[in-house]
Image 1 (cartoon, one colour):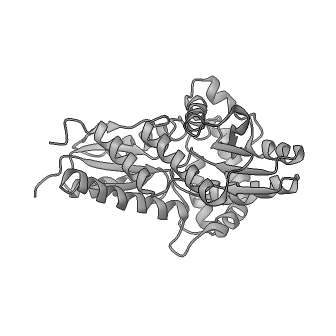
Image 2 (image 1 turned 135 degrees about the vertical axis):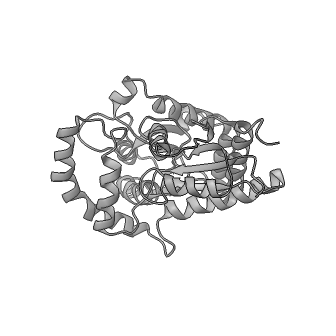
Image 3 (image 1 turned 30 degrees about the vertical axis):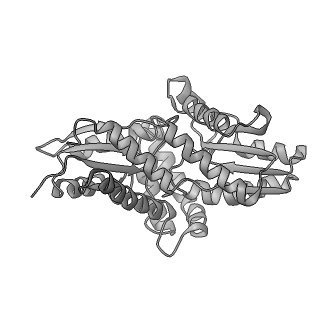
Amino acid sequence: MNKPPFGVLLVNLGTPEAPTPKAVRAYLKEFLSDKRVVDAPRLIWWFALNGVILRIRPPRVAKAYASVWTDEGSPLMCFSKAQQRGLKEALKAQYGTDIPVALAMTYGKPSMEDAGKELRQAGAERLVILPLYPQNSSSTTAAVHDRYAKALAPCPHVPASRWITDYHVHPAYITALANSVREYWAEHGQGDKLMMSFHGIPERYENKGDPYPSQCRATAQALATELKLNDDQWLCTFQSRFGREEWVKPYTDHTLEDWGKAGVGRVDIISPAFAVDCLETLEELNIENRETFLEAGGQDYHYISCLNDRPDHIQMMVQLVQENACGWDV
């Protein structure tokens, strides 16, 4: 078998296998048991998670998943698979040979072990690892690193690997984001405000050195600059709080409520923290936060989709892979 010069491992967070309380409970247990995600003292958190959270949250979260589930399954899974296919095709066009591209989830399926087996069977002995997180956080990118190391633990042959830890201001990423906004505005007109909403993390994570919030702000500033927006036309906010402690501010929902009360007529919202549309964008941003803004007095609310498998997004991935496979691609 002719071995490929390298392989690519795409990694996203994960998703329940079905929009049911049972499936959601299994997914949340694995996800929320990771100390990278919740760093509370283990014994205390075990009782809170198993005694309270996994009893109360799954039915509510399952209902939210059901509102965005498709005939093909979870949006996150569908779009991630589309990215996998698109990247494989684009890399073949670029290199003139098949470059294996495997998809893994940090939590749930397909597992890191399944993806590793797929890449080994394809003959890949060198890997470019691309976590689908534009901004680097201990709760996402570092969790991928931990899960990858765990999957490799029983392997007698550890492949050479190069990590793409972030691409938060990569020119091709900012260009793709700006293209998506401009295209939306060309079809639907431009709102009074552009909100760039990123998934939040606790404030103390940032205080301990997590680079994620500063990278989110840098992404937002770069996008605003590319779109030639004035300072009063855009804002970087943070969503998806969990628990009682303070998270990075400003909060997306609170800001939308304030804007609605202040008479802001139309808000356009985009979430550059997510490589694909998922529960946090399709349900939280497009449904929950829409209601928050309109009920507070806002008049019009427009959600701009994630980049998903847009051609310019796939080409950005090709560029990232090329930059990180330098010397392996011959």
